[in-house]
Length: 141
Ligand SMILES: [Zn+2]
Image (cartoon, rainbow, N blue to C red):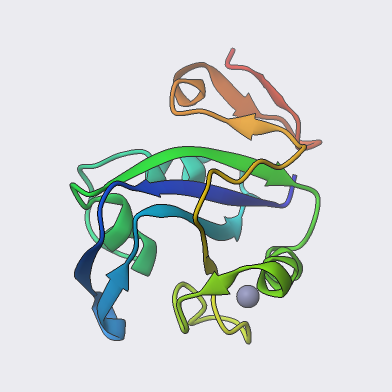
């Protein structure tokens, strides 16, 4: 698996200061954040943690008390390709999470819970699953 979509539920409308982006308005509903899973699922698992140093744009959303990281879907597709697919269908927050690439955004919005037919990672999986060299999830040894 090469990339993931993290699903973050926003409980109520709120605004937050997001590093270099400044003030960002978030709406009640679900946000989809696209990232790279090339080095396994530890990045996905980091999103589920509330207590962490704010390093990337997405950290300002996942650590909010109005937001709940729910799960992540895994894809065999390069992250920016996956992001472009989402851009065809969903609205986005311009400049979010895409400082290192040419995408308009890596954060998309959906009013209802988005379902993708692929492998899913839940917060509880972070304790007992890992990704093997072929990109499949397997029990931790
Ligand atoms: Zn990109």
